[in-house]
Amino acid sequence: MSAETSPSLAPPAHTQPGAVAEIIPPFDTLTGQPLVARFLSSAVENHKTSHAYLFIGPIGAGKNEAAAALAKALICRNGGCGKCDDCIRAARKTHPDIKIVDPEGAQGYVAEQIRELIHDTNLAPIQAQNKVYIITRADQLSGAPANAFLKTLEEPPARVIFILLARTKDSVLDTIISRCQVIVFRAIPEVEAVTLLMDHSRVTLKEARIALASTGGSAYKAKGFLVSSAARTLRIKVMEAIEQLGDADPLEIITLARDLLIYLKQPLDEVKVEQEKQLAEGGEFLSKGALSALERSQKRQLTMRERETLGEVFNVMRSWLRDCLALKVGRTDDVVNVDFLYNIEKTAANTTEAALVRSILAVDEAEVQIQYNVSVQSAIEALLFKIRKELVRYV
Ligand SMILES: [Zn+2]
Image 1 (cartoon, helix red, strand yellow):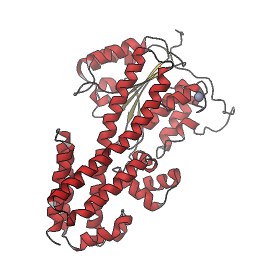
Image 2 (cartoon, helix red, strand yellow; image 1 turned 30 degrees about the vertical axis):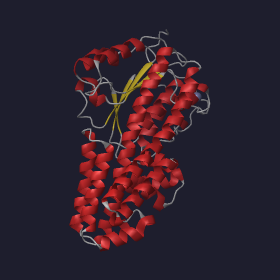
Image 3 (cartoon, rainbow, N blue to C red; image 1 turned 45 degrees about the vertical axis):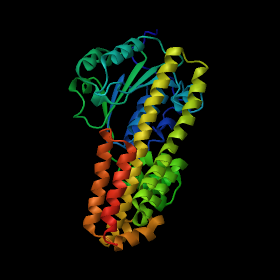
Image 4 (spheres, helix red, strand yellow; image 1 turned 90 degrees about the vertical axis):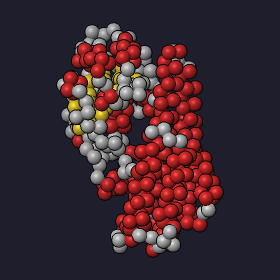
């Protein structure tokens, strides 16, 4: 292993000596966080990266994307050129020297997992010049596992860089914070997120607003929504189900819920196809251990996507109900789902504000119930029954 004490990089190929620092490619996708992008970009370009970062920011602020961009910039010999084998593998999440570490226990990171991580940091990089560990939930690192990790976090072996992520600073142990360079990500305001999406994804104002409403206001998730035909189909199916509620008898409501479940699975199929590609690619050169770690991480990714998809169903329902409410109180400009305007107008005309508010609360409640292991099908069925009861009694 090299005697270097800090990660270093060859200068990016496109850098002109004395040029004004501009954002280098891996960071140019960091929409809505120009300060963070400039800061990280300049650290990489000037070889002044830290051995440990803590990214703090709300959901949807782009922490994961920034961590992926920084990891790519650190393992590529050209600062994240996007073209070399390191960059391509990084983008496909199959680079053997970039490890994403999610908590393995229900309560957070477990001791054994941290022991393995520490052991792994002592092994030389497999392919690149550096090794990057992305700790996705620094807020879930506490107790004995955290204590075991502190020394390595403070003085990692040469060429090892940690990127820790958390939503708030308060949720992370002071002993962890003090060992990291803290980078704060701002929440991206909705108006700005809409503009960013329109520029980045080349969509209309209407499409950008729908994408944001369907993904709970996260510009990054909205970008994913716009390129996923399964996610867009799911939204339409949720809208259609809610439209048909008024005329549905109990048996039909159960059928509507069942149909939704089918469409819920489709975004997962998109992920599975991508994962199979990753595995096939990884199979060429990854060790048995690295391959099974990849499989474990894919499984977690699938569970996470499943949860997100379900969240999208609730977001779409909420946004439809909010649109009805907006019309009810005369705020026509606030209506997002203009492609379903006819039904929104009809519902708004035939119901009360209170019934709409109760329906929105029912959606929130169903979302909480699912976290407590209530089956998805029964939660969605119960929710459709509740919304129907609230909205139809006035028709
Ligand atoms: Zn590269």
